[in-house]
Length: 369
Ligand code: THG
Image 1 (cartoon, rainbow, N blue to C red):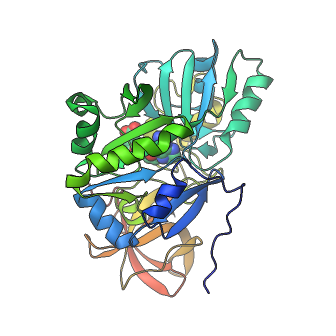
Image 2: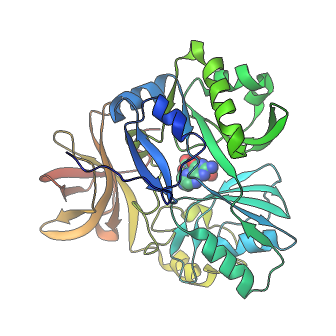
């Protein structure tokens, strides 16, 4: 028997764990100590369906850190080199979060409700403790906690149709990375146009575990004519689209510049950001290595369970951290960290995958737009 995941209270259930089961979830990973589905039909079947129709994803594991109080905005700006001064009360920003050395701690979506209230929608690391530590250490006037809020993503080309059928036509007017309130059964929930696919769609920040199943059921009822299915972030689609996975593609060892997130460190970077000084040096000198796409030749690669060495003339020049067969590009696609001398687009390299060595070429991200 292949090893399976042992589930317990520590691997927290979500509001939709039962629904995932009913819809045939085949594999889980653990993300923020919570279950995250990874496969329904198969990764390839899920991929084709996501690009044609619409899926409902249990991404409750994208936990919220709520920061509330008069020093909330000051604290959020301490976390990130991205300039927040122009951010409106209905905006979401993708923000690198860094430590005092400029090392990445997380790459969350910041959801601004107003100057005194934010959500930080986190990737897979225990960011809550860093945020609380900063607030206590700096004597800031804020409350910091994980609210009972669980994102449910609606992704795919028919996402607008599905959302409009349930919540009305006005939802179509919501702009990318903007949010608004919607009502369901008399309760209010935040909805943003965002999500971890490049197909487009929405995320409903479901307020209250008890509201989860009724909203899920209403989406499936409304989407009957749209071939709606349960889905999850898709490994192939997110690599093609260049969406990074914290803990896989970058870690605390990497700066935002290395992760290709330099465009989110602009401005007087850093004014107020804890890692600002450290990053300013790299802003001038440039990073020594950086995220790139790769096309890996040969038959389908196995899943990348460890960093795969990237070699040039027998010397290691980087590593591949995510890889998958892309049906639409008819080649393997990958994301890796490559040293400066070898990161130019078109450079030929060798990738030592789990099974065997393969020829590969450096490409730009995203691999598909
Ligand atoms: N949605 C929400 N929370 C999240 C994620 C999400 N938390 C964890 C994880 N995903 C955070 N990581 C990302 C990575 C990429 C994007 C969002 C979250 C993303 N990037 C777009 C891009 O790179 O093209 C847009 C970036 C921009 O222009 O601002 O969407 O998915 N709630």
